Image 1 (cartoon, one colour):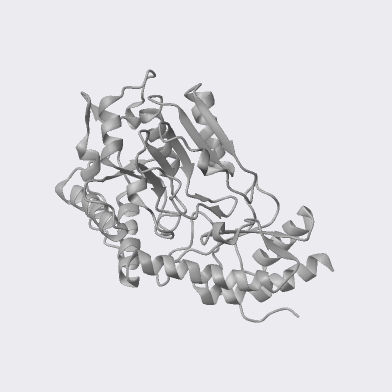
Image 2: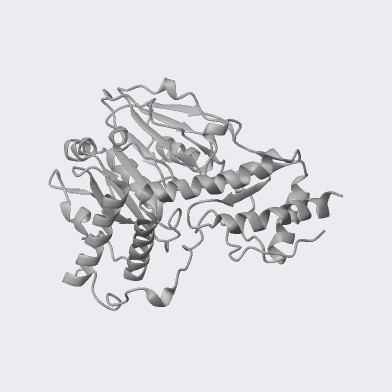
Length: 371
């Protein structure tokens, strides 16, 4: 029978993600609007966002955090164009975005000493093939496949190359072994549900050394440049952004950071996301018509949960349309390059009660399109 109870918040999109519970646009501090981002006020607010990021995530004191243009994509491109080419590169990829980084490295930067380690959707590549003398590029969480890296044990503590990690749908939801990661990029419209357009770059001292000791053979657009005269532009990591940021997006980000702190910090946010995954796991385990795309339980994402169904692609589309029309689940279709199925966001901005309310609707919609 058709369920009667609907999720209070039907926003289960994997990006931009749901706003935090209780979010109220009118409660944002708008004193920076209409002011220069280079004013003392503007720089102070940007610096505040950086300082809170470091404190909440437990980023080491000697790491730099900077706000850059172009979301996570801009952050990753900035890093790859500025740092790669000094050593051979190992690229580990198993879904759309990771494969996109390989394409840029091979076809745009044209680096010939590149090793591609590919796994199909639902699986991880063999990380034991990582060469500590090479640079390494990988995503921590495959947003379009629902497959995450369970840990960083495969990364050598004696590595000579640098590790570049796209963590956009992992940071604030999964433990980050910072000592293993030389570059981390993310965008705050993912796990925190912040407003888009901006990316964040986290640099280890080793990454800074690379920037200051290596000059790529290709020209760098101004928007990618992190050094001047062979030295890091420290202002980027103190709130002096490369281009004009949206200060409304920045204060929205600070609101999300304060919310995480109010939960009890990043560990509480991680626990909430894992609880959400458990709600979905219990549902899947009790049914034979729906499965996780990720084959191994320890590799299943607790943010972008990807599910396959015993149904045709057309039936899956019809099911998604039904759920949207009923106002119980928006934007839960699989990514366009992924196998047909559902992708349900389970990060901490989603309430477990809303996922529990959604599940009977999945049963109903599946029966509607398959029986």
